[in-house]
Length: 344
Image 1 (tube, helix red, strand yellow):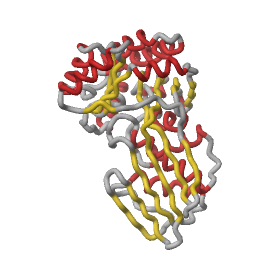
Image 2: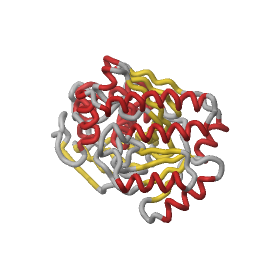
Image 3: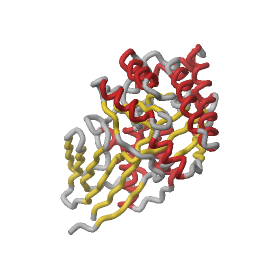
């Protein structure tokens, strides 16, 4: 048998950074995001040879071990090792497993679409399918958060795990004591298609490490400086943009993106740079109403709302920069998906 899963990446529309502790613990966070039809994939093939084998397609990395109950937390495929250790400890009475885990992603890592968290969700989905684990959507999302942020001590927020698990357009609230409320927004297909058609997704081809940006945001919350005020405004824009969607006011959503981006850049000094600002200004001067980076910042994917037929001229202008590329996509309403395949 093969046990497969896929989980969608997300665009962080508004509120990004307010899901990161300690801001969310003290002030409460609010995030608006939407998943797209680009995915992290995982396949588990059980083995009977006493081996554990990890294969990550994107970076052509293969790791193999004798089956043990706990793998060392070092090396390239740290996420895979951490997930295995937790699964065996929590659900298999520390009895080791023998299997091959193959993973791949439709986008590069460090691209601002929640890649690492989405990959964790996909891998947990494959294990849940194989071992029939008693985990619902909230369970999987929170478990993914625990593994990545607590067990492996990787810097970041909470939205990515929930977006990948639930899928669709969601307004998420992050409260004290790790409480998360996912509010799926009922957006009509006409509005969703129009929103998608008017949105340009652009890959800067500039990979970034989000950890140091997030660490700076954390320090700014503690210092209560101007960056904290910017975070409050970014959260306010999340509520505003949610209402724009529910009222089917996409033009207002586009303008709100511009306001949100202005405030987001104040949250940490490395969120934007001259390279990113040039891309943004090119899009705006070509007809986009607003846009932003998806994720912590510093590179990765950017997206822009381009009303009516302006998306064509915006795409052309961005292409002429000869840096980065326009990425085809559609919004996706479905989150984590798992299934079993009988081998021939």
